[in-house]
Image (cartoon, rainbow, N blue to C red; front, side, top):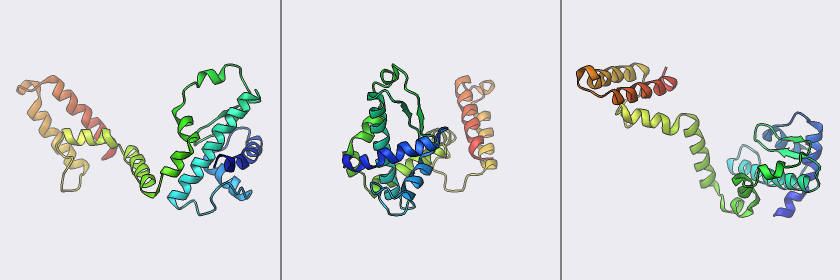
Length: 195
């Protein structure tokens, strides 16, 4: 499979030279597909498993290209989903990235073969949960005892529960300062998600 991504290296270099300020991953994938790169699956990118496979193959090629450029002292490849950019070679750059877990992941083609639809769906769900507050939001809701609420959560309901907890745990009424601080911090978190 590594040989298949060899076909991506030259078209990637051409695209990077055409975009000296950098190019986003999705735009680069679209460009490579328009160029007819046979190394990328041709199924629609709206299919999440196909999108993951294209992403993985592209990043495998990018990390391999970075190594080739460094070996030749021809440049440094900045790799990020939002901006992939070719930079001039600087001595010592490789030493700064001695252990890169993402590099190890994308260079292991077994990861691609082991990832099916269920794993891609789980990755996407984890991403969206994180984007929507995930653990931080859930912890705040748990503190307010609203994590498993049957009714829909509204800003008004959360404020009402906040006032109840403040009244119950205020130091002037025998509560603890640390508990009150935790309640205030949880309210700050929840206000970001429920306005």
